[in-house]
Amino acid sequence: MDLRDQNFTFVGIGSVIKGDIVLAGPSHICSTIEGDIQIDKKHQLTIEPQGNVKGRIRCGDLNIYGVVCGDITAQGKVKVFPTGTVKGQIVAKNINIAPGAKVNMQGHTLES
Image (cartoon, rainbow, N blue to C red; front, side, top):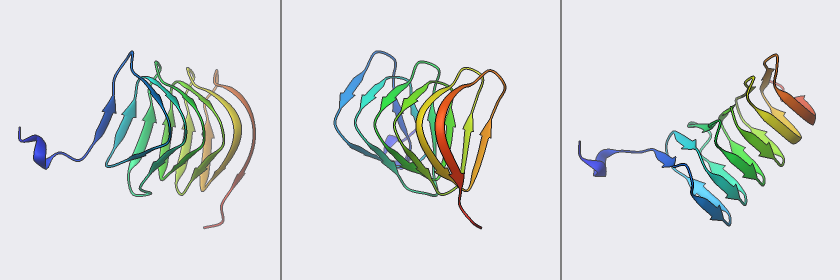
């Protein structure tokens, strides 16, 4: 595998990033991010069960298995899975909250 041809981001368990970040390609967060996250709207962002984000997220599609404390603006779908926790505002084209998810939010969907 030639890493120069790969276009994804994976932030592993145990890492802590403080500050705003801009991600490229499909991205998975398994760590703590204290700052805003921005990713191109055509790529998916996944907050894994070990992931903890304290800051705003701007993205296309977003899957939340971990914890997000902050406002989310998504051009596509936001899915909060049973292990997920969200505190903040969600603005997205589509919002899907699975049974068992912990959600304390204001939210509305964007018009198509």
